[in-house]
Length: 541
Image (cartoon, rainbow, N blue to C red; front, side, top):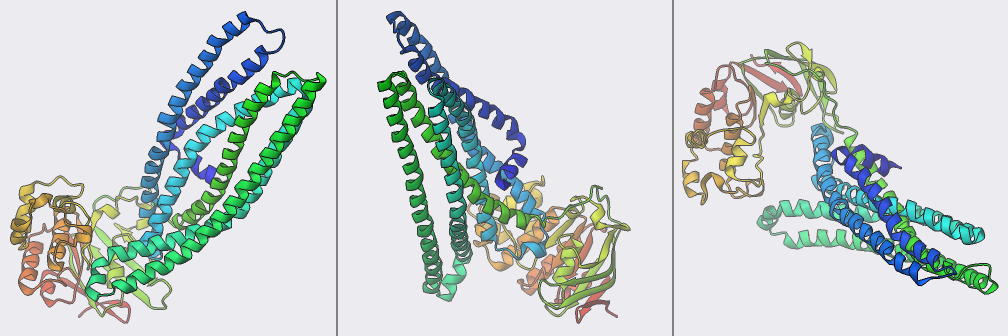
């Protein structure tokens, strides 16, 4: 089954814990089910008081062992759910991070977040359920069948047949409920996607005065989702009633068979102890098994959808990139998603330390070229070479050689310091000096906690010009050898633009700059100038 394979493939550091807890579950099943077995065995004639006295400490030992085993299962086994889910989210995020931008852009972030979260929660929960149920079911069912067969092989065969029928019906019903669960999950994902989309753009909604429109969109999606939820729950209730009906019928039938046997003297009355305790235990485990099967089939749909998305992740090479001497784009052709428009780069060379300006009308492919240079996109045709070797030969260290400043500032809901330094070790003095050079001294004086002030989601506590300059400052502080700037001064006034240009002039001569801009002032930084004409990159004369 897809989910089981996915779970076992992603256990990673939890593999040993998983199998040990499965063993603990089996031992707990033996210790707990030993109590009714002992009572049934020791209440067969002839019964002596001495035997019953000796039975008490043995039962106490079994119960004490069961307490210890269940403590392990509840402390470690149930913790496995959260630990595994958290670890799974991180590793699925790492896989999503390797998706090409072209592929990633086809999925809404809310959909992908909902899907990853659902898989992480579902698979994490299944890991502890399997640990708890697997060992218990195997040992309890085996012991129940062995000891009932000693009294009546016919009764054991009937009970085993009923259990098989129960599991078979459970699987059939679980398969029928999966499409309903899939529909429920898809409609809930749409609600979550819409909710995240509207919530992250709530400031735009307020500015446009379209709150009633946003509410109506959410309510419409929620109404569709509510209907699919009820269809699923109604089938689930019918399924639950049918499965319990099978067990209740089996219980009454077996009880009548035993009473008839006791009356005829062919079955010991003590077997009633084992039957009542054991049958109830087996019923509970069988019901949980049925729920496990349903959950596995439901989760199969989640995992299949996620694997379809993540199957597009890039496979990097193994060689470290090393220091860049020259990047060459050779006969590059690239199309934009489903659009017929194409971008053509017959020849483009970028040497270390170069300063290059790229201009052209909007939609020609300027930003796409920066993504290809930074190894975030792969061209449809042609190749791009790093020191004469194709990008595909190198590992992810090649991507880490670039710092990209996008048109829209991309800030995190973290402190200003973390947004600027990320994982680099940079002194506050250096950070503050650069912010002052970029004209952000007044901002720093106005922030209540200085560099420790949280900037809000997407930096919404800052103005557009402040966010853009912080975006530029971060790129400079990270000191990457190649800096790609996409319209870096589009939100800045003339004075702020001059401050940015002054900071860029002070960069080390070894730093390579590629600037996409329509602003003539930035041209003074560059020795080379390329132009996109009708989607084709040419050297500007």
